[in-house]
Length: 161
Image (cartoon, rainbow, N blue to C red; front, side, top):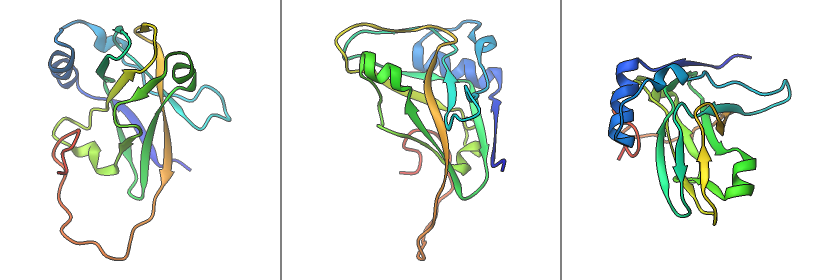
């Protein structure tokens, strides 16, 4: 059953976010890869970093992936660190688990999935351009009976208040 589609954000959106988050301009948009599962039994879709980042112990960074995802209503994309990076470097997501809601696709930033990571380990963590660093898993969710004052989404991190 297909409930979602990954696609690239525009080059303009990617470049704008790259400059805002990492303070640089480059040709890394060509390195943006559509997330994919490694095997037929994999639950997670691997996200690759289009840019190289070096995180010293205790440092964090927000990586623009260049990816957006159209998700059917009633489903969510949950992001987790790849287990090998968690074990070797104690890499974690800044927000513990990334939640990509179905309405994020239409956000003002084109639904650009930006992933914040932190190196909680004791050695440098180098993520090269093209390295898989996070995995995304789709899940169905359920609603409570009472819903009031539902707002429209506009942006990314913390955009709903």
